[in-house]
Length: 288
Image (cartoon, rainbow, N blue to C red; front, side):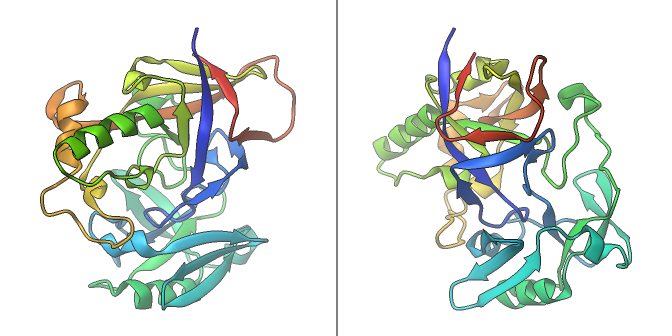
């Protein structure tokens, strides 16, 4: 049996904007609290990410008391309430899509949408949306994540779990080619672990904490062009790195040309487990 520890925790309140690193945070089966509770959509309701608009990587997010704060260098900031249910009950509901999934959403705050349009300068106007009251996104991949697993606006699973040693192996390969190392922000994990050898996270089925909290590691996370976006400049790498190097080190099981990094994960609470709000903290130990 191997013991691993949490080295880093990050939530991403708005899909594809910068994340917030925390030392300790509430957790539910839907993910870290407030993770991907908001997203930007085009006029047709289709979600938009750094894949289409790399400048999204330059927008900071923060939680200040009861508010979510969005800010960017030389652009100022805008605030919107974290607990938005009552505020949005009177807002018109419309349909938005995340990949193949349709969700009922409402505009979260017109002022936040306006600020984001000014900061991002998109080719068409965007709206910042939240899930409509009492709407639950249908699980479209029950064979992967279980029929009772739900998320807000995450791409797939409620959690993405990465391994520090895998990043170190990638950076060793990059520097060996004379390239600059990259940091974990390129891969947007929620949980970063230490204690595993490089890429062996794909061989682990679950992480068990002593109190009954269990993370089920479901499958490889296939990466995309977002890994080539510099999180400090918002620019894509012309040579498609570190994607190509990563694919040569750790390919998807069914596609040797596709890069894999980190693991999609779900949360289970096993009995006996004390009642109340569950939390994850840096330094937490898990057995696997």
